[in-house]
Image 1: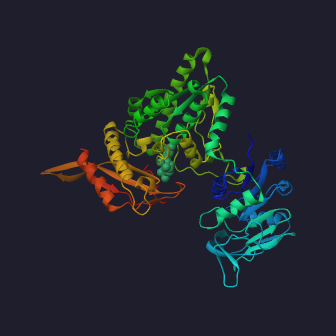
Image 2 (image 1 turned 90 degrees about the vertical axis):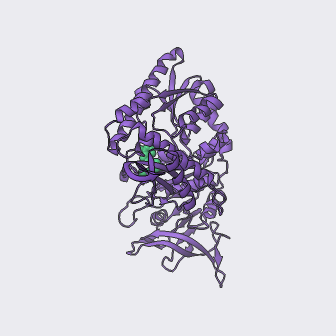
Image 3 (image 1 turned 45 degrees about the vertical axis):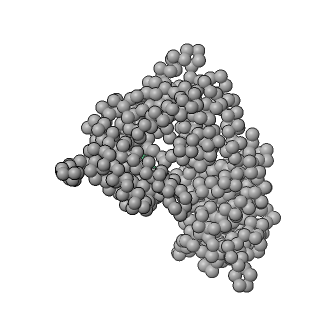
Length: 539
Ligand code: XMP
């Protein structure tokens, strides 16, 4: 099925993905591509009539100084509506004959914009009206350069005192542009504006819905796989779980899941994964208990990156050995595909044009790149088009329990990066129990104001094992035991995060339970560091 599509060309703004998520929230399918796609590629996309509009994103760069990135000329000749945002507006102005001027002063933050001219984009959209009847919008601005002269055919659509051309439109060609950012929630009517553009101006059909997506995705998997066999590495995380449930729905017995237990999972996690997939879904799951191997190889390693690399390498080795065994055991029914829970943010080629792409690695995240080639398997990635919230909605539509689908993320190296320094079984066992108490209490503690549990009010929460001993007193005796730190953060993107202001009563209960119930821990601390400068994990 071909969905109506909105194309988002990325000039490298930090928030380009937000544009895509806002568009998807209107139930319209969209894709993000680098801004330097070719004219020929664009024309190919437009063939068949499913391309309904183009959005030009913002950028961290300036059109007059650092960046020479421009929209492909074909954007303006395809005959579909175009929306320029921030840098996208400036490049539109420049490319269509207007003027952009550098400004020494950056405007950053909240602004009130007067909406002029009653264009189709902003008609009847306002946060308030001034005494003399002008519609006003509360928006988020972040720019240095600005458009100083409208391109021919354009009229003024919005303005502020410091930015007289804050929006422009050529309604004949359906070109619209705004200097502010409708994709961020600080722009109160941002969602309404994007919805207006996508549904009203582009006339895109709102048919991107996860409930309906199940049938479509199942069909696609069946078509790709045919009667062949698929192997999937199940981790217990949301992505691999939803991928497994979806593929199982599509091809049942042709799917084999391999679940590698590295001994660094949370309390009872292995059993829960088996119960769900082998028990409830009746999927074929091979559980490989490799905890002894992982623990023995990790002995003596203290450095976080070295621990990550060791865990990543062993994980691949164990998985590969199991895959090869299954492959050769299959005989005529040999496995042909390796399924992975890759999701859309992993796929998007972000960072403006390919040539100016920059990437910074702070921690080496372990993933299983290169495996399909080594195993001689084709890749099957049924979640490639989906954002995380869509993966969750799909999981629910497939009947997975909400506790699994809305579970906090858990890093690939597991407790390996939550035990500081050398990993030992004794430490992992203590940490697992402390972590389970913390999570149980978070789930059980309901915030009166929102009616939600503190588990749902936090984005990630866990316990960290500190291999230092401190003195305590228990009954009549002195103790000399380990310390556990609790970490709970709130974040929307995991790039930055605030420590969660958990109620004292909750912290008190968790601390008292951990110290009383777990022999070997006599002190609990709460981590009050935000990211940056701290990271979410301690290693
Ligand atoms: P940091 O600690 O970098 O964490 O602020 C940001 C998010 O990434 C997760 N994380 C990892 N996930 N392998 C993973 O699969 C890793 O090595 C890893 N390190 C951090 C972390 O749990 C948080 O959600």
